Each structure stands twice: as structure tokens, then as C-alpha cells.
Image 1 (cartoon, one colour):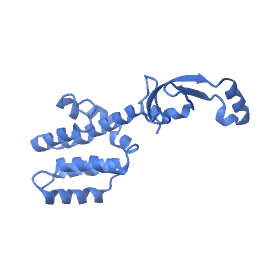
Image 2: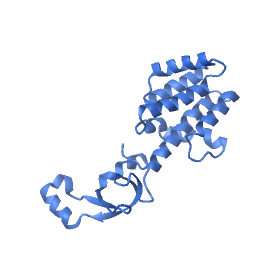
Image 3: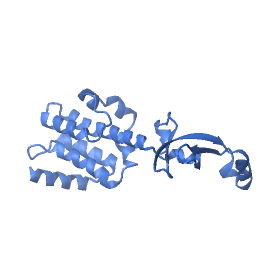
Image 4: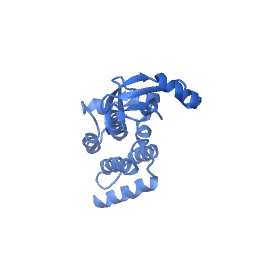
Amino acid sequence: MAASQLGLGNPTDLFWCPIEGGDRKYETLSAGRIGSILSKVDPERFENESLLRCKGCDTTFDSAVLDVLTNHEMVKRIDLAARSLFGSLIRATPGDQDVRAGALDAMMAYVIRPGSAADLIDLDELTEASDPLRDVAEVLDPSARQLMMQRAIDVSVTGGRIRARHLGVLVQAGEALGVSQQWIRSRIVERRRSR
């Protein structure tokens, strides 16, 4: 899904430059004479074509490069996914102080700006509007998704056991992240044995 479709637009005119290997500012160019020639050669591809120029390396790109997530957008997705996952564990058993402390601690590894504990667990509006875990699953490789799930499992298993509510959250989060139930259950067994 394109970044523009997710509402993660770039108000600062940043894009991920493949030449520079990072987020850079750009300016939009008109296709001009070259664009009009190219539109005669391949009208479907080059009609109304817009181009942009990287202000860092001065390279010109097709506007399709804007559909690649910037580093900032990727970090924002990871932040929202962590808040959603660990906040869900806290909300599943609000009185469990061990899970709360572990979830808040684990979340700090992922969030951009920690803020207050209330900011970290008040996710009702966010999770109704979108699914941050599914959004981040599109951009993280399998090992990064499994690492996030492992942190959640570590938080959930307390005193050598896991509550049914936490298991439900883990299974649901695993489904959104593309991590199998078998993988989750095997890691829970390993974690319970190590406690």
C-alpha cells in the first residue's frame, strides 16, 4: 500500500532517495520537452508524468518513487505498532503490575517519544482507525516481526505461566504481524521453562 494511501503523507517534501540511501528533500519538476517526447513514444506511461529532483544528489526521478516509505514513516509505523501491541497486553489485565512494568519497559525500545504512561496505553482511537500491526508487517522482515513478538511473549509470561487474555492478545498480534501460532506457542513453552 502506498504511503499516501495510509495518510502518512510527507508535508515536508521528503522522500527516500535510492541514490543517497536515506530521506531527502525534493522538488517537483514539470516533464517539459522530454516528457512530451516520451508521451508520444509510450502515451500510457508518460502522459501527465510528473518528475521530482532530489535536492541532495540532484538526480531526477519518476514520481512513483514517492510510494516508497521514508525512514521517518517506517519508524512512525513501528512506534504505533509497539504502542498497540504492548498497550493491548496492559489493557488485557490492568491490575497485573508485573505485566504493566514489563510492557512499558519493552515498549521503550520501539517508541519515538516515550511520553507518559497514559500516552503509551491509550490506544482506543488509534486501533479503531487502523491496524498498526498489519501496517508494520508490510515493512518489517520476518525476523524483526518475530523479535517484536518475542518481547511481547517475555512480558506476558510471569511466574512461569501466561494468562488466557494475554495468549489471546499474542495470537491476534501474531496473526496481524504474520507470525504463526505454532511459533508463538513454541516460544511461550520455552519462556515458561526458563522461568
